[in-house]
Length: 234
Ligand SMILES: [Zn+2]
Image 1 (tube, rainbow, N blue to C red):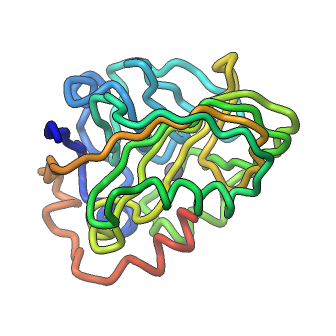
Image 2: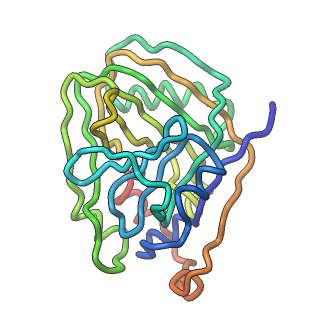
């Protein structure tokens, strides 16, 4: 297996603690990959990076192309080179789709980048409005806005990450959705897939940046974030 890496711009623990602002720009992140997800400073929307273009999925459900000067407190990206491609052609719930994807994983101890381009009879996603102050992620999650899409085509972009890495990045499936016309999207909460093309890439190396902001340097990051992440991200 050729080595590929996941770049994480800051440990997710920091975001969970409410450190919602860092100086890392999208142009810096773009050097580390052309595919991935994350968020923007002050949690101003969900991020999708697809084919080297950053999309900002805002709390009104619309998507914009984000300027590369924009900063991010948390992003996970890779150079996407799928080694497994398959067609999925049944109607299935998100739970069934996750079980199917799970069976495709070689091992639960690697990371996987995944892209699913498909048609969905329904799909529920969320985004978060820009935050004014530092607040823990669990509190911010109360402000999330949910969107329901019906009969929509688009791309799910994201990762599967082992539970043991939960202080660094979101464990389990973490997928963001972008419609085919690139005008709408959000963090995936639920879906009913009708048909899709699944592309997977195992990842066996992690590159983690540790921020230098005063907030980060003084934060207490030893707490167990698993519960908070499960509430805020799944
Ligand atoms: Zn997300």
